Length: 395
Ligand SMILES: *[C@@H]1O[C@H](CO)[C@@H](O)[C@H](O)[C@H]1NC(C)=O
Ligand SMILES: *[C@@H]1O[C@H](CO)[C@@H](O)[C@H](O)[C@H]1NC(C)=O
Image (cartoon, rainbow, N blue to C red; front, top):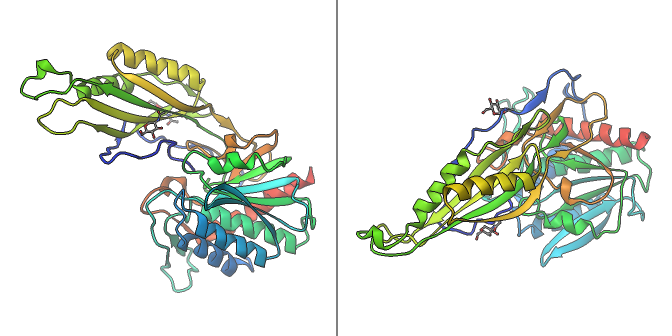
């Protein structure tokens, strides 16, 4: 899941969260999720081994090559036909399916790239065999989204072994690059020349079926000033003062909310300005990411521009992508459902397919230094994916 589309190019960074993290909107009336009782599986060792291999190979966005090469030969060894789709030099999407039919009714997909920094894999069990449910898998990507990748691969394999999907034409797997930084991988997938009835996106949802997720809007706030000796402030114009006035106004903008998606929130994630303590700063910039829960990105942009420029007319605002709230399908029985705050590949994949979002692990630990999930989360996700795929194929 993406944190931001902005590249972190500046040396001096500071995070300033203007609003508190939200309580996720949860639907507690639903029946218990498929596989929520510890499933007895014959595939657990294979699943944990695949997940381990994926996590052990660093694949920070831009450097996914080794992980993709590993997964490609793994899938070929398991009888899949594997196509590689170049996205950029050394960076490929993988499309895997059984037999010769690349066009399938259902696509399952997740991403191989992770955010930095790399954290090594570690298995932590309190009991010697993990039988008390404490069997945890730690490291970068364990949750976002290599847990989903491993569970999706295992689910497709298990359905194939059981004869629950046809030899060809039912389900394909797309593992893409670049999800964490702008989504170049999923946009490239629009050139595969394929269309599906349903696409199942693997991202951490605590094995709940998503009803949707927030959209996003990013912008830079740039303040220009006039440099000079700090002991004669009247001779210059302080860019940092200007930026701070703009940020103050930004924090007071009433952002729209909806019952379905919650509050629109924003994060000032990068801030940079000035050259020395005794120099009037000539330049100051802040990068901001808005999580859109209501209205449209265009309307929110207008609100922000008006408020910020009223407070400090010399500022410049440069907006990049804007995506409204994304609704997903949840018409499969037996799952708890949830609305998520983060962004995904979903809006990047064109087509009129149904869109499902589901996967193992807690989204609250992703992108952190304590990213981890449990073996039973992975097992439950395999069972959940099997249900989703077979239910969609029944229609
Ligand atoms: C939205 O913001 C309001 C006001 O800050 C807060 O009381 C409420 O709990 C928030 N809603 C969610 C779903 O987080
Ligand atoms: C904001 O600034 C960063 C760093 O210069 C840049 O990478 C990004 O593209 C900018 N975003 C917009 C919306 O201008």
